[in-house]
Image 1 (cartoon, rainbow, N blue to C red):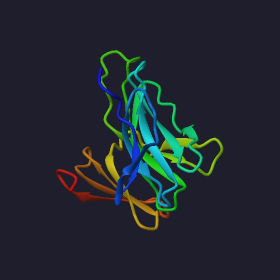
Image 2: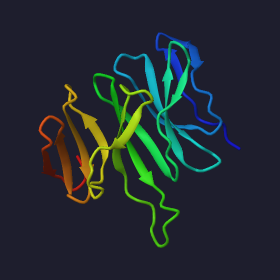
Image 3: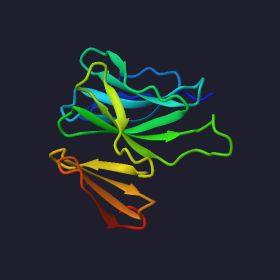
Length: 172
């Protein structure tokens, strides 16, 4: 068997200072560092179920908090809002309980870290809005993501609720 992938931190000026900060037996798939550098949100594979969940590591205390409970789904690719209070992520549902339905395309969900426990919800109430590759605006009021259904980059404004489509075949 292969060694699971974990997160290590090192000072670039002193590579020998590297220290492991996650110790998952099943591998870290990807991660995002909070804007203030004190926390890391990471997607951890569950080797028993084949799913993945987001977890939050506090770098000061070492405490780990589970953020999602993605039963029959992969929840990956955490992207922090610039104020550090919300994390967007991609969710792919496996749909194993539905006959003749395959794996769903990625959709963007949000984790609100201001609630205890953290709450999660889809970015869009319309389940036909798919998407991946989310990026936040500097002020956190807007996001962009690629949506293959609309063949473009969606620009969503949280303050107005407006969505604009920028035509793009490949999301760039």
